[in-house]
Image (tube, rainbow, N blue to C red; front, side, top):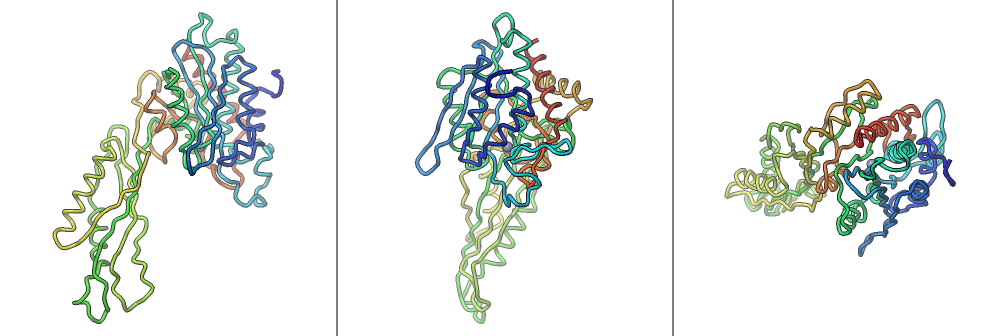
Length: 393
Ligand SMILES: [Zn+2]
């Protein structure tokens, strides 16, 4: 046993959960990893990133080995707030185990996943003379941030830039976000859709409802534009993705009266888009459709929100095959390669190397009583271990 902590996944997960690391706090979480990885011979860097108007955030990069092939395990130790702590069956930061479940904020998203990857790597190294490969080649690293759940500006983006500036090259990445829907082994995420939000504004002329000829009502006009933009499909899906879609999420005129025609109407929308678009081509497409629907009469415009959620995909190939085989061996299930769901830090990592997401089951993430099955934590550790065996074979 290494000094200062047990090295099995359950113990590491409990040690992490007991640090109340609600973004931006670290609360000792990265210290748990630093201690374990240093004892195993990793070169560990603790990095604090910040910028005006944001809280400084702790991050960690640790690597063992200096030659390729280089596999990196990525993740975040920050968690969302517990909500009403009195509603939890066990304390949100207690790490209690009951009826085969480990309770606590982050058990699933994603301290549990990090614990499995660290335990798998430590076990793997212990079985291979402390090195990725006996001939001295191969590298394993951890890219761990404390800034994923909130605004994500002082985390993975800056950590990757820092690593690139010192010449770090990654060949492949496994991100341990909770990718499975119902059963461990049902899903590997190989990509994510992009996300782009905007607000549609329609200008009219304010006036008295009794004299509509002296006013121009933007309400029917924005309704027409909403229908036009919602009805026409953006595409019909691609090889790896479902169809892109645009959803309006609010319509507002800010009018407290019933006798005034409002001067302006606005509607917010979000688009989840696939790899047939980029943010730029998508904005052009929507603006063209808007211009066509508005014609010369309706005065409409869109204000786009800044977004760093671009689409990415890791094309199925040798690396995804290796992960599928490891998962099938450990669980008896052949996982689906999926691109559904929300965004994650994989969108940033994808600019540096192929990345897949595979972790625990997402069902209770961000909920009261977030919990992970102890058996799944053990199985996920075994899966990561088999990924390493195959990667360095
Ligand atoms: Zn997460």
